[in-house]
Amino acid sequence: QVQLVESGGGLVQAGGSLRLSCAASGGSFNAMGWFRQAPGKEREFVSTIKWSDTTTYYADSVRGRFTISRDNVKNTVYLQMNSLKPEDTAVYYCAARIQWSRSVKIAESDYDNWGQGTQVTVSS
View 1 (cartoon, one colour):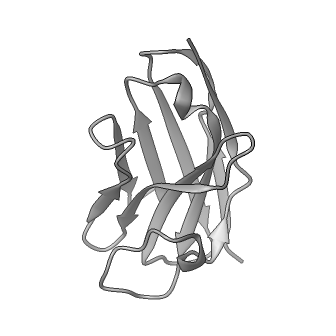
View 2 (cartoon, rainbow, N blue to C red):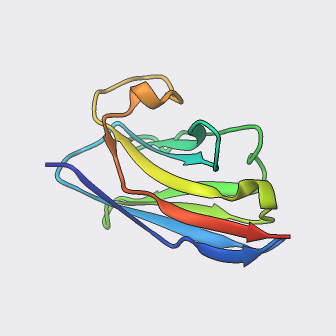
View 3 (cartoon, rainbow, N blue to C red):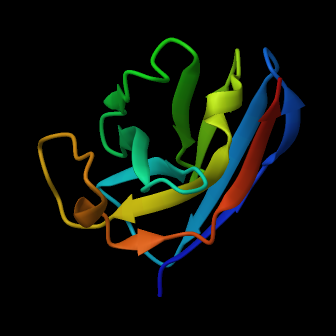
């Protein structure tokens, strides 16, 4: 059974940094990604990384500020978030895709398993 456990959220001032972690167990994955959901808004794609070749992709809103990476040994994916803005405030979810795909996937429906989420709050 696949299990994803996020950590690293918290409260930070605008301009600050946080690093989220997602420890995965119970399967092998084609890709892992991060999504977020702000209050009153739908969940949106943030970033993804393909497990085999580390191809990455970012939403326009975070490109250049966030970096996704993975540790094969620890089976963990990270999201380094720099230059945080109040609009980055959201619950951040880790997601894993098992089915193999050559292309990058950014839709929620492309991912099979989800973590519980971790709150990130950026104060102005």
